[in-house]
Length: 129
Length: 484
Image 1 (cartoon, rainbow over the protein chains, first blue to last red):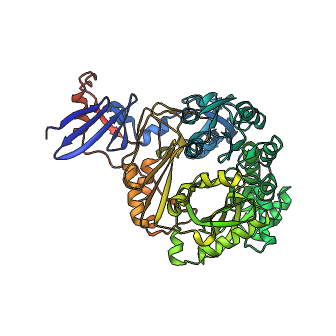
Image 2 (cartoon, each protein chain N blue to C red):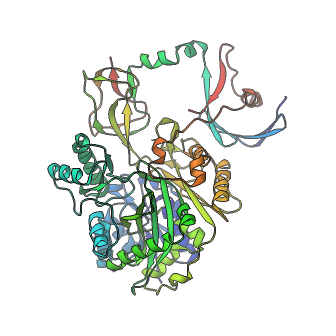
Image 3 (cartoon, chains in turn purple, cyan):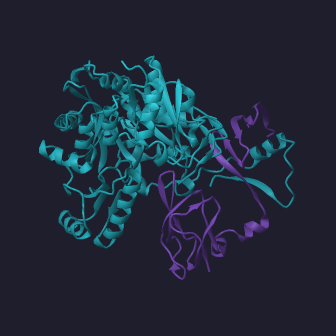
């Protein structure tokens, strides 16, 4: 069960394990492809794992942009009560509109962007109480 | 033939047209915005012209800049590709006024067909079947409510000048009509500079089947058969194939639809390549939807089954050549299927995913055709459509073609940005897809699932062991791999 690994060219590996052949492509980010299927390398800290699951969503206060884009329309106002999965705003990027949904039920504490604003990835758009 | 041709587009379609120009030994001019200085199109063209800042409204949609570039480089023809200004009658007219050949139909034909409402009226006038709905653009909410209740919900709102799902909304009931009209109209305004929308009855589980047309300047029109594009997400096609699985059930359907498409095109004095889109219901009744007065994204599947090159033919026809083919000359062989590789994240509601492609492995082998606009190291801009490449395959029959496409996808690696390769691998394994049992809302209920995890952590551990430079993980942590 000792794998036979050779580097084919920088960042590309052939792995023979239990008689099976695998190819691994690395990238500079935390993503690799294993037999052309992509995987993200995640470091699992037991303390974080304990916090994951249903409890994690209820802890989210800041709703962030998953990617850069432009705010097309606001769907919620401060003080609104929202359900989990309810649309908060519509973000447009690459000519597509995407509804940003609330990760949990709650009350909107603040909407941190205006319609027409350009936002960057990870920027806080809406804060829940 | 033309002295020099400017390609007024970007991405994979610019590359597709530039390749045809090189094959015809016609000098080419690519255009680019700030975001596209390093594009594949610029690299493959003989000459390149700068248009302006990245937003398309300041670059690829600027008629004045495109014509100035054509003049400066001595181009006597412009190929518009698809999207952007390809279906803009003003652009076609401005080219004609400048003495530059627009490689497509005349401005008059685009006007007659480019607006869906106009095309619909034309279709009605020649007796072609259309989906029940409005014959003109909607002007106010009261009118919309009246019409919607007459034809019955659900209804579809569509942009009169549109395509590609922009400015399109399905409305289930009257209470959501007003908001949907407003959204569709503003999206239409942004995408096509025209806020005109119209209403249509939404058919239940229809198929999308379209007919490829070719016409010369001398009134001769033929069809190249159908493409089935029923697999759509947000009204955007993701997989296209030819022939339609319906053709096996009803060999006359192709020719009946082809005849209807030709009648509509003839009434508009149509020349060059074009596509008549139809919906087909469960009883195989077909309804004309709209005419796309340009080359389609999915044209490769038609090329693969007919052995014709549509871009070469577009060049000949625009230059005034007589179409050298009669309808009976067209033969369809085998099966072709194409998927659109997008920079988007299937695990995150298909959010667009711009950024740098760090690693790119491309498929090859028997029957594989790749039309790509990207390369390893390319930064996919957030300003444009997320289409990276089209992967098309040909095989003697449909199931072999599907297996071949799956095989080609299994050789394809894109790292650095998210993409829909694995989504396609799942979709192509779906029993309904294999059976050819398709409809335009199929993907609304298709559930994408993350792939199963790799065999234990052995591989990950092996990889980490091979890279001594990588810092060892603290004992309290372990590494794992996830796909979401």
